[in-house]
Image (cartoon, rainbow, N blue to C red; front, side, top):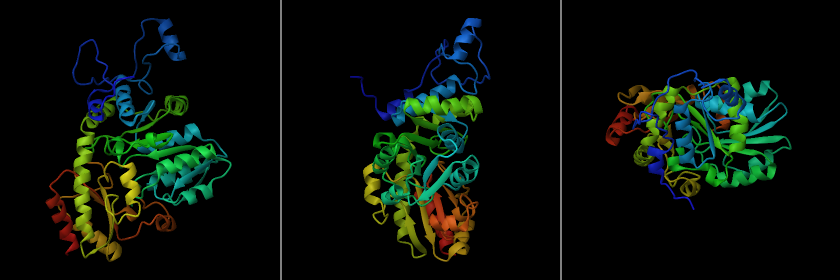
Length: 391
């Protein structure tokens, strides 16, 4: 039996392949192509008869190191890195779906994900039905003979809705479909969907995997078959590639992933508890609160609640914007996963391009704000929000 290596060790050591120079930190290979020893070696690599780097669109040592490390953390057989989180979802859809196929997607997903499935994939003859992500009955009721993919975020963006991964894995297997889970909010430091039965895990590495808002990146992980036979082939041809520089930055981010996720989750829980007591707050959405509708499920499949807290401000958009505009420290940006706390108004930013009906169906109201808690002092985060809440 192979020796079990712990998460924290894998985050520092997995994926390291030192060059002839014996560097301690991972090397950054900023090159577009690679030189072959002779024509026979070139031919063997291009046809797949020999392993080795060919062209950085689809083979690069720094990108490979990131893929191997993330795969080790997720417990995946294979990983394909992409240029962004959305390109990871696009690569998955384009590689594994065809005209006439049907997708079941949670209604509580990122706005761009809705645009991708409904508008872009719809033009290629792929139909998508949106269901209540927390209702297994809704998923089962919407299945069709041509359903090939179940897609969800858990926790969802921005309402932190929790879906039962193990139950949905059973549903997808009975239907002969694949289950893909966007693990952006939790990362493998807090949740491992593959261990719960998911077929694919998708990441926007831009968020917590980097952790400091520096670069874009994405990844798709899972069994070797669908990842390497399908998604890798799409990447090789279509080229939504992760740059070696970004891969190197993401490698450095993975080294501190668990430490950051633990600290930010603990601060987010305290902030959520504080907001829940605040008289100007209608409702707080955070998986670590007993008031969350899927609190027990979150405790079962997540190690901690994560760093994202959403809440409804009494008074709708006007009062929500007042809170945003009164901040002096918190960054007003739609990005998340940073060590710096961020705030956004989802109805007019991340979900602003979808229809009012779709926003209503997803539960995104005009008074909703989303805060991604960073590593500042919690008292300063509270004081910055209090300024707008008391105005």
